[in-house]
Amino acid sequence: MRFFGFGKTFGLMKDRIVMVVTASQLMRVMGRSMVWVFAPIYFHRFYDTSFFTIGILFFLGTIISFPFSIYGGNLIDRAGRRFVGLLLPPISAALFLVFSLSAFLKFPNIYAFIAFLAIFPLADLEGIVDQVIITDVVKESERLDAFSLNRIGANVGFAIGPAVAGILAEFNYGWAFIVPFFVSVFVFMIYAKYIRETRPAGTGTRSTSRGFSFPKNDRKFFIIVILLSMIWFIAGQWGTTLTLFLSSGYMISDQTIGFLYAFNGIVVIFFQIPVNNLLRKWHDFKRLALGSFIYSFAFFFYSLTSYIPLLFANTFFLTIGENVLSPSTQTVIAKAAPEDKRGEYFGSFYAISGLIVPMAPLLGTYGLGFLIHAGIIFWGLIGLSGIIIGSISYLTLRSLYGNQ
Image (cartoon, rainbow, N blue to C red):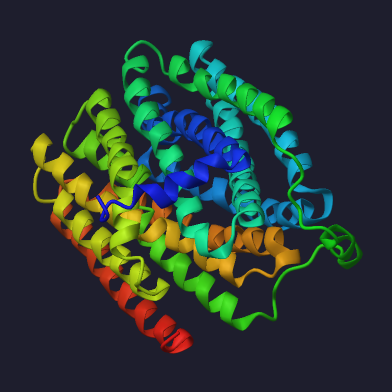
Protein backbone atom coordinates (compact mmCIF):
# COMPACT_ATOMS: atom_id res chain seq x y z
CA MET A 1 0.00 0.00 0.00
CA ARG A 2 2.94 2.32 0.47
CA PHE A 3 3.54 2.19 -3.29
CA PHE A 4 0.03 3.44 -3.97
CA GLY A 5 0.60 6.43 -1.69
CA PHE A 6 -3.06 7.41 -1.44
CA GLY A 7 -2.89 8.80 2.08
CA LYS A 8 -0.88 11.94 1.35
CA THR A 9 -2.88 12.93 -1.71
CA PHE A 10 -6.31 12.27 -0.27
CA GLY A 11 -5.32 14.13 2.87
CA LEU A 12 -5.82 17.26 0.76
CA MET A 13 -9.52 16.42 0.62
CA LYS A 14 -9.79 18.18 3.98
CA ASP A 15 -9.17 21.47 2.16
CA ARG A 16 -12.63 22.66 1.11
CA ILE A 17 -11.38 24.90 -1.69
CA VAL A 18 -9.29 22.12 -3.24
CA MET A 19 -12.32 19.84 -3.10
CA VAL A 20 -14.68 22.40 -4.66
CA VAL A 21 -12.22 23.02 -7.48
CA THR A 22 -11.84 19.26 -7.95
CA ALA A 23 -15.62 18.73 -7.98
CA SER A 24 -16.02 21.57 -10.48
CA GLN A 25 -13.31 20.07 -12.67
CA LEU A 26 -15.03 16.68 -12.51
CA MET A 27 -18.35 18.13 -13.67
CA ARG A 28 -16.89 20.40 -16.35
CA VAL A 29 -14.75 17.66 -17.89
CA MET A 30 -17.69 15.25 -17.84
CA GLY A 31 -19.66 17.75 -19.92
CA ARG A 32 -16.87 18.99 -22.17
CA SER A 33 -15.60 15.49 -22.98
CA MET A 34 -18.98 14.75 -24.52
CA VAL A 35 -18.33 17.63 -26.92
CA TRP A 36 -14.58 17.16 -27.56
CA VAL A 37 -14.86 13.43 -28.29
CA PHE A 38 -18.04 13.45 -30.38
CA ALA A 39 -18.03 16.87 -32.07
CA PRO A 40 -15.64 15.60 -34.82
CA ILE A 41 -17.96 12.66 -35.57
CA TYR A 42 -21.02 14.94 -35.33
CA PHE A 43 -19.56 17.45 -37.79
CA HIS A 44 -18.49 14.70 -40.20
CA ARG A 45 -21.75 12.76 -40.19
CA PHE A 46 -24.32 15.53 -39.60
CA TYR A 47 -22.83 18.27 -41.81
CA ASP A 48 -20.59 16.12 -44.05
CA THR A 49 -17.59 18.16 -42.90
CA SER A 50 -14.21 16.97 -44.19
CA PHE A 51 -11.47 15.73 -41.87
CA PHE A 52 -9.27 18.71 -42.70
CA THR A 53 -12.05 21.22 -42.06
CA ILE A 54 -12.65 19.61 -38.67
CA GLY A 55 -8.95 19.98 -37.95
CA ILE A 56 -9.15 23.65 -38.95
CA LEU A 57 -12.04 24.18 -36.53
CA PHE A 58 -10.02 22.76 -33.62
CA PHE A 59 -7.02 24.79 -34.74
CA LEU A 60 -9.04 28.03 -34.90
CA GLY A 61 -10.60 27.33 -31.51
CA THR A 62 -7.24 27.18 -29.78
CA ILE A 63 -5.83 30.13 -31.76
CA ILE A 64 -8.82 32.23 -30.70
CA SER A 65 -7.90 31.37 -27.11
CA PHE A 66 -4.51 33.12 -27.39
CA PRO A 67 -5.52 36.70 -26.45
CA PHE A 68 -8.09 35.46 -23.95
CA SER A 69 -5.41 33.46 -22.12
CA ILE A 70 -3.06 36.45 -21.87
CA TYR A 71 -5.62 39.04 -20.83
CA GLY A 72 -7.63 36.55 -18.82
CA GLY A 73 -4.55 35.56 -16.82
CA ASN A 74 -3.87 39.21 -16.07
CA LEU A 75 -7.52 39.75 -15.16
CA ILE A 76 -7.32 36.87 -12.68
CA ASP A 77 -4.41 38.68 -10.97
CA ARG A 78 -6.13 42.05 -11.06
CA ALA A 79 -9.84 41.38 -10.44
CA GLY A 80 -9.41 38.21 -8.40
CA ARG A 81 -9.91 34.48 -8.81
CA ARG A 82 -13.50 34.42 -7.54
CA PHE A 83 -14.73 37.20 -9.84
CA VAL A 84 -13.46 35.46 -12.98
CA GLY A 85 -14.58 32.06 -11.70
CA LEU A 86 -18.15 33.34 -11.40
CA LEU A 87 -18.10 35.27 -14.67
CA LEU A 88 -17.34 32.33 -16.98
CA PRO A 89 -19.96 29.59 -16.26
CA PRO A 90 -23.06 31.56 -17.41
CA ILE A 91 -21.37 32.37 -20.72
CA SER A 92 -20.36 28.73 -21.14
CA ALA A 93 -23.92 27.61 -20.41
CA ALA A 94 -25.29 29.83 -23.17
CA LEU A 95 -22.80 28.50 -25.73
CA PHE A 96 -23.42 24.84 -24.90
CA LEU A 97 -27.17 25.46 -25.19
CA VAL A 98 -26.74 26.86 -28.71
CA PHE A 99 -24.47 23.96 -29.69
CA SER A 100 -27.01 21.44 -28.44
CA LEU A 101 -29.89 23.15 -30.23
CA SER A 102 -27.91 23.02 -33.48
CA ALA A 103 -28.36 19.25 -33.38
CA PHE A 104 -31.94 19.19 -32.09
CA LEU A 105 -33.26 21.86 -34.49
CA LYS A 106 -30.85 21.21 -37.38
CA PHE A 107 -29.36 24.70 -37.46
CA PRO A 108 -27.11 25.60 -40.42
CA ASN A 109 -23.54 24.53 -39.70
CA ILE A 110 -22.33 28.13 -39.20
CA TYR A 111 -24.22 28.39 -35.88
CA ALA A 112 -22.77 25.11 -34.62
CA PHE A 113 -19.28 26.13 -35.72
CA ILE A 114 -19.42 29.56 -34.03
CA ALA A 115 -20.73 28.16 -30.74
CA PHE A 116 -18.11 25.40 -30.83
CA LEU A 117 -15.24 27.85 -31.45
CA ALA A 118 -16.38 30.19 -28.66
CA ILE A 119 -16.23 27.35 -26.12
CA PHE A 120 -12.42 27.04 -26.44
CA PRO A 121 -11.26 30.29 -24.76
CA LEU A 122 -13.76 29.88 -21.94
CA ALA A 123 -12.55 26.35 -21.25
CA ASP A 124 -8.96 27.58 -21.12
CA LEU A 125 -9.80 30.42 -18.74
CA GLU A 126 -11.70 28.11 -16.40
CA GLY A 127 -8.66 25.83 -16.31
CA ILE A 128 -6.35 28.78 -15.57
CA VAL A 129 -8.55 29.94 -12.69
CA ASP A 130 -8.57 26.44 -11.16
CA GLN A 131 -4.79 26.03 -11.39
CA VAL A 132 -4.11 29.49 -9.95
CA ILE A 133 -6.47 28.84 -7.02
CA ILE A 134 -4.73 25.54 -6.22
CA THR A 135 -1.32 27.23 -6.46
CA ASP A 136 -2.57 29.89 -4.02
CA VAL A 137 -3.91 27.59 -1.32
CA VAL A 138 -1.48 24.63 -1.41
CA LYS A 139 2.15 24.54 -0.27
CA GLU A 140 4.76 23.91 -2.98
CA SER A 141 5.67 20.50 -1.52
CA GLU A 142 2.03 19.38 -1.87
CA ARG A 143 1.25 20.80 -5.31
CA LEU A 144 2.01 17.62 -7.25
CA ASP A 145 -0.53 15.82 -5.07
CA ALA A 146 -3.06 18.66 -5.28
CA PHE A 147 -2.84 18.90 -9.07
CA SER A 148 -3.08 15.11 -9.25
CA LEU A 149 -6.19 15.06 -7.06
CA ASN A 150 -7.70 17.72 -9.32
CA ARG A 151 -6.78 15.62 -12.34
CA ILE A 152 -8.31 12.50 -10.80
CA GLY A 153 -11.54 14.43 -10.38
CA ALA A 154 -11.33 15.54 -14.01
CA ASN A 155 -10.86 11.97 -15.15
CA VAL A 156 -13.78 10.69 -13.11
CA GLY A 157 -15.71 13.13 -15.29
CA PHE A 158 -13.89 11.92 -18.39
CA ALA A 159 -14.70 8.32 -17.51
CA ILE A 160 -18.40 9.18 -17.30
CA GLY A 161 -18.76 11.73 -20.10
CA PRO A 162 -17.78 9.83 -23.29
CA ALA A 163 -19.46 6.62 -22.13
CA VAL A 164 -22.75 8.43 -21.51
CA ALA A 165 -22.39 10.53 -24.66
CA GLY A 166 -21.79 7.43 -26.78
CA ILE A 167 -25.17 6.11 -25.65
CA LEU A 168 -27.00 9.45 -25.98
CA ALA A 169 -25.53 10.08 -29.44
CA GLU A 170 -27.28 6.96 -30.71
CA PHE A 171 -30.55 8.90 -30.26
CA ASN A 172 -29.44 12.45 -31.08
CA TYR A 173 -26.13 14.27 -30.60
CA GLY A 174 -28.10 17.10 -29.02
CA TRP A 175 -28.75 14.99 -25.93
CA ALA A 176 -25.00 14.58 -25.41
CA PHE A 177 -24.32 18.29 -25.95
CA ILE A 178 -27.04 19.57 -23.58
CA VAL A 179 -25.34 18.01 -20.53
CA PRO A 180 -22.53 20.64 -20.28
CA PHE A 181 -25.21 23.36 -20.20
CA PHE A 182 -26.55 22.00 -16.90
CA VAL A 183 -22.99 21.40 -15.68
CA SER A 184 -22.11 25.09 -16.17
CA VAL A 185 -25.13 26.12 -14.13
CA PHE A 186 -24.11 23.75 -11.33
CA VAL A 187 -20.50 24.97 -11.31
CA PHE A 188 -21.66 28.58 -10.99
CA MET A 189 -23.76 27.64 -7.96
CA ILE A 190 -21.00 25.84 -6.03
CA TYR A 191 -18.40 28.50 -6.87
CA ALA A 192 -20.75 31.19 -5.62
CA LYS A 193 -21.39 29.30 -2.38
CA TYR A 194 -17.98 27.89 -1.47
CA ILE A 195 -15.10 29.69 -3.20
CA ARG A 196 -13.60 32.68 -1.42
CA GLU A 197 -10.99 35.01 -2.89
CA THR A 198 -7.59 33.27 -2.68
CA ARG A 199 -5.35 35.93 -4.22
CA PRO A 200 -2.35 36.57 -1.92
CA ALA A 201 -2.73 39.77 0.10
CA GLY A 202 -1.25 42.85 -1.57
CA THR A 203 -0.77 41.34 -5.02
CA GLY A 204 -3.85 42.92 -6.56
CA THR A 205 -2.62 46.49 -6.19
CA ARG A 206 0.69 45.78 -7.86
CA SER A 207 -0.96 43.85 -10.67
CA THR A 208 -3.35 46.70 -11.35
CA SER A 209 -0.60 49.27 -11.54
CA ARG A 210 1.28 47.21 -14.11
CA GLY A 211 -1.70 46.89 -16.44
CA PHE A 212 -1.66 43.86 -18.70
CA SER A 213 1.77 42.24 -18.84
CA PHE A 214 3.60 39.26 -20.33
CA PRO A 215 6.76 37.56 -18.96
CA LYS A 216 8.75 38.36 -22.11
CA ASN A 217 12.08 38.70 -20.29
CA ASP A 218 11.93 35.35 -18.48
CA ARG A 219 14.11 33.29 -20.85
CA LYS A 220 14.02 30.08 -18.81
CA PHE A 221 10.22 30.21 -18.64
CA PHE A 222 9.98 30.60 -22.42
CA ILE A 223 12.27 27.64 -23.08
CA ILE A 224 10.24 25.48 -20.70
CA VAL A 225 6.95 26.52 -22.30
CA ILE A 226 8.16 25.88 -25.85
CA LEU A 227 9.39 22.40 -24.93
CA LEU A 228 6.18 21.59 -23.07
CA SER A 229 4.15 22.78 -26.03
CA MET A 230 6.12 20.56 -28.42
CA ILE A 231 5.52 17.54 -26.19
CA TRP A 232 1.80 18.29 -25.99
CA PHE A 233 1.74 18.79 -29.75
CA ILE A 234 2.49 15.09 -30.12
CA ALA A 235 0.16 14.12 -27.28
CA GLY A 236 -2.54 16.22 -28.97
CA GLN A 237 -3.14 13.47 -31.53
CA TRP A 238 -5.05 11.75 -28.72
CA GLY A 239 -8.46 13.22 -29.38
CA THR A 240 -9.64 14.50 -32.74
CA THR A 241 -7.12 12.64 -34.91
CA LEU A 242 -7.39 9.33 -33.08
CA THR A 243 -11.19 9.56 -32.87
CA LEU A 244 -11.51 9.99 -36.65
CA PHE A 245 -8.97 7.22 -37.27
CA LEU A 246 -10.90 4.77 -35.07
CA SER A 247 -14.25 5.83 -36.49
CA SER A 248 -13.45 6.03 -40.22
CA GLY A 249 -10.33 3.86 -40.46
CA TYR A 250 -11.41 0.95 -38.25
CA MET A 251 -15.20 1.64 -38.44
CA ILE A 252 -15.51 1.39 -34.66
CA SER A 253 -18.91 2.43 -33.26
CA ASP A 254 -19.54 5.65 -31.32
CA GLN A 255 -20.41 3.65 -28.22
CA THR A 256 -17.14 1.69 -28.30
CA ILE A 257 -15.13 4.88 -28.84
CA GLY A 258 -16.94 6.41 -25.89
CA PHE A 259 -16.05 3.47 -23.68
CA LEU A 260 -12.44 3.61 -24.88
CA TYR A 261 -12.10 7.22 -23.76
CA ALA A 262 -13.98 6.43 -20.56
CA PHE A 263 -11.43 3.70 -19.86
CA ASN A 264 -8.72 6.34 -20.20
CA GLY A 265 -10.39 8.27 -17.39
CA ILE A 266 -10.69 5.18 -15.21
CA VAL A 267 -6.98 4.44 -15.57
CA VAL A 268 -6.17 7.98 -14.44
CA ILE A 269 -8.41 7.60 -11.40
CA PHE A 270 -6.72 4.43 -10.15
CA PHE A 271 -3.14 4.89 -11.35
CA GLN A 272 -2.36 8.62 -11.12
CA ILE A 273 -1.31 8.45 -7.47
CA PRO A 274 0.73 5.22 -7.81
CA VAL A 275 2.58 6.75 -10.78
CA ASN A 276 3.27 9.89 -8.72
CA ASN A 277 4.59 7.82 -5.86
CA LEU A 278 6.78 5.68 -8.10
CA LEU A 279 8.37 8.70 -9.81
CA ARG A 280 8.25 11.18 -6.92
CA LYS A 281 12.06 11.42 -6.68
CA TRP A 282 12.47 11.94 -10.41
CA HIS A 283 13.15 15.45 -11.60
CA ASP A 284 10.57 17.21 -13.77
CA PHE A 285 12.63 16.90 -16.98
CA LYS A 286 12.90 13.12 -16.57
CA ARG A 287 9.15 12.70 -16.04
CA LEU A 288 8.33 14.91 -19.03
CA ALA A 289 10.62 12.92 -21.34
CA LEU A 290 9.30 9.58 -20.10
CA GLY A 291 5.71 10.69 -20.69
CA SER A 292 6.58 11.77 -24.22
CA PHE A 293 8.20 8.41 -25.02
CA ILE A 294 5.23 6.43 -23.73
CA TYR A 295 2.82 8.48 -25.84
CA SER A 296 4.98 7.88 -28.92
CA PHE A 297 5.07 4.10 -28.61
CA ALA A 298 1.36 3.94 -27.78
CA PHE A 299 0.37 5.96 -30.84
CA PHE A 300 2.34 3.63 -33.11
CA PHE A 301 0.69 0.57 -31.58
CA TYR A 302 -2.78 1.91 -32.50
CA SER A 303 -1.79 1.37 -36.14
CA LEU A 304 -1.07 -2.34 -35.64
CA THR A 305 -4.49 -3.69 -34.71
CA SER A 306 -8.21 -2.94 -34.65
CA TYR A 307 -8.84 -5.74 -32.16
CA ILE A 308 -10.87 -4.06 -29.42
CA PRO A 309 -9.25 -5.72 -26.35
CA LEU A 310 -5.78 -4.72 -27.62
CA LEU A 311 -6.98 -1.14 -28.22
CA PHE A 312 -8.08 -1.00 -24.60
CA ALA A 313 -4.74 -2.45 -23.47
CA ASN A 314 -2.86 0.15 -25.48
CA THR A 315 -5.05 2.91 -24.10
CA PHE A 316 -3.99 1.77 -20.62
CA PHE A 317 -0.34 2.12 -21.66
CA LEU A 318 -0.91 5.56 -23.21
CA THR A 319 -2.75 6.76 -20.10
CA ILE A 320 0.21 5.86 -17.91
CA GLY A 321 2.20 8.28 -20.08
CA GLU A 322 -0.49 10.86 -19.55
CA ASN A 323 -0.28 10.28 -15.80
CA VAL A 324 3.45 10.96 -15.95
CA LEU A 325 3.20 14.03 -18.16
CA SER A 326 0.15 16.01 -17.09
CA PRO A 327 0.75 16.91 -13.41
CA SER A 328 4.45 17.48 -14.11
CA THR A 329 3.47 20.17 -16.63
CA GLN A 330 1.44 22.04 -14.02
CA THR A 331 4.05 21.80 -11.28
CA VAL A 332 6.73 23.16 -13.61
CA ILE A 333 4.64 26.26 -14.43
CA ALA A 334 3.58 26.73 -10.80
CA LYS A 335 7.23 26.61 -9.72
CA ALA A 336 8.27 29.15 -12.36
CA ALA A 337 5.53 31.69 -11.53
CA PRO A 338 6.18 34.52 -9.04
CA GLU A 339 3.53 34.79 -6.33
CA ASP A 340 1.99 38.00 -7.68
CA LYS A 341 2.03 36.84 -11.32
CA ARG A 342 0.53 33.37 -11.16
CA GLY A 343 -2.41 34.24 -13.36
CA GLU A 344 -0.06 35.94 -15.82
CA TYR A 345 2.29 32.93 -16.03
CA PHE A 346 -0.40 30.28 -16.30
CA GLY A 347 -2.21 32.47 -18.84
CA SER A 348 1.02 32.95 -20.81
CA PHE A 349 1.64 29.20 -20.83
CA TYR A 350 -1.86 28.57 -22.19
CA ALA A 351 -1.38 31.35 -24.76
CA ILE A 352 2.00 30.18 -26.07
CA SER A 353 1.04 26.51 -26.11
CA GLY A 354 -2.15 27.64 -27.83
CA LEU A 355 -0.07 28.70 -30.82
CA ILE A 356 1.69 25.33 -31.10
CA VAL A 357 -0.59 22.57 -29.79
CA PRO A 358 -3.48 23.50 -32.16
CA MET A 359 -1.29 22.38 -35.04
CA ALA A 360 -1.74 18.81 -33.76
CA PRO A 361 -5.33 18.21 -34.94
CA LEU A 362 -4.77 20.46 -37.96
CA LEU A 363 -1.77 18.54 -39.30
CA GLY A 364 -3.04 15.24 -37.92
CA THR A 365 -6.39 15.39 -39.70
CA TYR A 366 -4.69 16.67 -42.88
CA GLY A 367 -2.32 13.71 -42.93
CA LEU A 368 -5.10 11.34 -41.98
CA GLY A 369 -7.02 12.36 -45.09
CA PHE A 370 -4.21 10.86 -47.19
CA LEU A 371 -3.11 8.01 -44.92
CA ILE A 372 -6.37 6.81 -43.37
CA HIS A 373 -5.66 3.33 -44.79
CA ALA A 374 -1.91 3.46 -44.16
CA GLY A 375 -2.00 3.69 -40.39
CA ILE A 376 1.47 2.22 -39.83
CA ILE A 377 3.06 5.04 -41.83
CA PHE A 378 0.86 7.74 -40.30
CA TRP A 379 1.24 6.74 -36.64
CA GLY A 380 4.84 5.69 -37.20
CA LEU A 381 5.74 9.24 -38.22
CA ILE A 382 3.93 10.62 -35.20
CA GLY A 383 5.68 8.18 -32.86
CA LEU A 384 9.10 8.98 -34.30
CA SER A 385 8.45 12.71 -33.93
CA GLY A 386 7.51 12.17 -30.30
CA ILE A 387 10.72 10.32 -29.54
CA ILE A 388 12.80 13.08 -31.15
CA ILE A 389 10.95 15.87 -29.30
CA GLY A 390 11.11 13.97 -26.00
CA SER A 391 14.88 13.50 -26.41
CA ILE A 392 15.45 17.18 -27.23
CA SER A 393 13.36 18.20 -24.23
CA TYR A 394 15.27 15.88 -21.91
CA LEU A 395 18.69 17.17 -23.00
CA THR A 396 17.65 20.83 -22.95
CA LEU A 397 15.89 20.77 -19.59
CA ARG A 398 18.70 18.74 -18.02
CA SER A 399 21.15 21.47 -19.06
CA LEU A 400 18.86 24.13 -17.57
CA TYR A 401 18.27 22.33 -14.27
CA GLY A 402 21.65 20.64 -13.86
CA ASN A 403 21.62 18.40 -10.80
CA GLN A 404 18.94 20.36 -8.95
